[in-house]
Image (tube, rainbow, N blue to C red; front, side, top):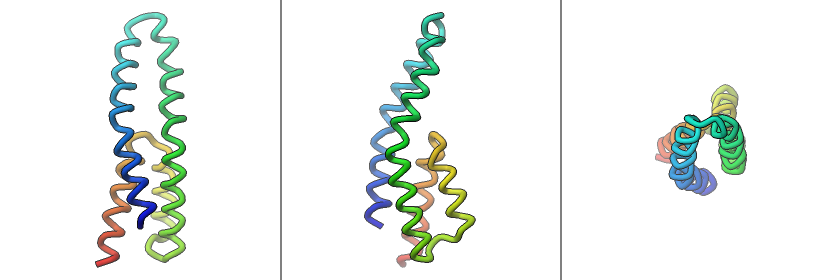
Length: 103
């Protein structure tokens, strides 16, 4: 439960970074040099997302081992951990599921 809470906090704290990254890509996309930089910025954004996704996967594994999450849900959420924006939705859904399970 604590791991899932911290994963959620980390992912939420990264939102301003991704907003700034998106704005930079939009502004750079109108120039020729910017078109070359946009793929690099996308790669940087994805690489920054990976460490928090590893925490998400660890939380998923714990939930599955505790019997809270079935295999199908585990696989779905595991894939979502590697998709930008969907990872945050996945963690929020897991947090809600855990809250319901503990009541």
